[in-house]
Image 1 (spheres, rainbow, N blue to C red):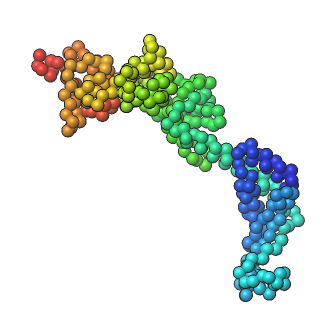
Image 2: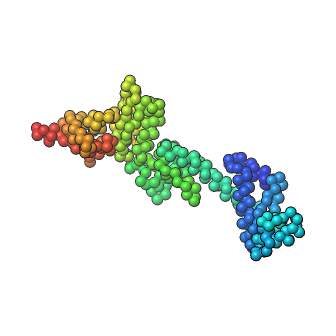
Image 3: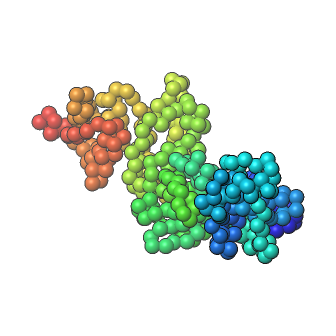
Length: 346
């Protein structure tokens, strides 16, 4: 190694946001291993790099003792005092043992360490960036497909949209730009693994936060979401300002705000419902678009019996029970739906 190498090291450290001293410390450790590997020594050694010239020296470290049991690790007090009369038992004597051809080995080892540490640092930076963005939306390009998984290019790294996180009937073409939800960021031996989703209810929540200023400011709050991705979502909203209609704020003028979200979700239907702390009102609203006649809520069993008009029964239950199922998820109540005829024997 030489001064030019150290200058290059400093430049790399600045560009990659890595401490130069940490790099040199890592090189020190690697050089000790390289010395022992190449010269088969059992000595206790340390490596010293001159911060100005880049010159590398290896020193054998021996502890001063009265009687030597291990000549590789110890030196007698008599021999130590021959070097320097101030040495005492327990001191460590450093003796330069740098081999003639160690400079070439040192340079190769240092380069390997720097490359490895840069790779680790870059992975660490990416991990730190994306772990802080868990449960957030990211936009990326569909890069490739492998074994039913879709890989998304996020710019600095690649993320995975697994089969279970893909919305049914959505087609992901190479080069498509899509929004996804970061479910989890994991550390692996190959670097950070970023798990994305298009099916998570959090995706809908974040899309509403992006499109509705009243949600961003905290005036309107999303209380709960129930979703069957690709088909239908129900979202319950509440306004902390009585002058602001939470449903209207989410729908937007002429339905523009909600339409942007529907388009992003490729036509997924979205029911926006006003949240209420009165379970009878809330359950009744959750069954929208069906019109409800009466709701009887039993707080002890957390079950609600709902009565709808005969013509509204199929709408309230929904195709394959979807509307009732989503309403139950949204409210957290068990819902039993009866038609007017069934409930009152009319």
